[in-house]
Image 1 (spheres, rainbow, N blue to C red):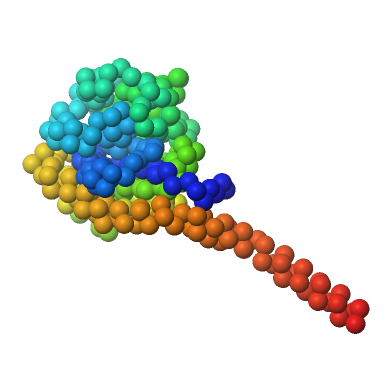
Image 2: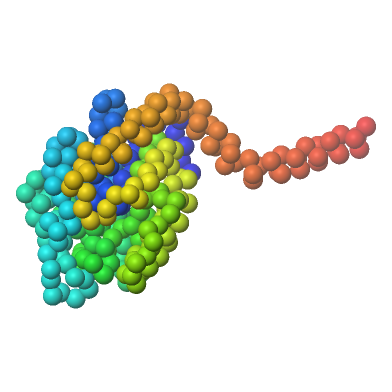
Length: 297
């Protein structure tokens, strides 16, 4: 484990959540208002889409105007390809229109996007490569969207492995990690069909892993957005935007506290990591020295 008590660089992880991703824009707005710089950003699925716009210099208000009219019907194209019902071409075209045919490594803010290899189950973290291709892969919900092939690997939604991608941030230089979870629900919708049962089962598995992974973040912002749609929130954009904005504003004090106290926090982390292993050795050494001293006397 690498600990740098003077590293106050902030890394932000934006989780998946389909049309609920509008809440991420409210989070970004809270950072902007407090003039707190985000040094690196990662995203999965809908979080990847929002993250890429921000990393390439679009402010929160601009992203909101672009995404406010988005719904599932506007970003899906029915296809006869194998592996899914819809293609991700509309997402690719939108990124090309707004950001250009750009590469991840050219982002103004260091960016990581996560996808899953559907053959091996491996998480792939992209910090370089064609932006549109990788975002489409990260958003390719299995069974719904056709998987995206990159370098011979068949890729789908990154949320299967890490729905809130905290793990890339430390390697990107973050000293303080902030994680936004859009799926922190206490209860799932009552299933009305077989499809609902399958959907709930998948979400339960993903959310179970996410709650364990969130413990690795310095600051977690869990949001219960169960009363919003996964497919279309066009009539509730402002409300959903504020669902991210207000909780993040409340957490800003914690972010600032972390920046001021990072040296002490790093020391405590080091002590907590070392003590379980070193205390028995220390006690054994003291016992040995005490026994030796008694024998000499």
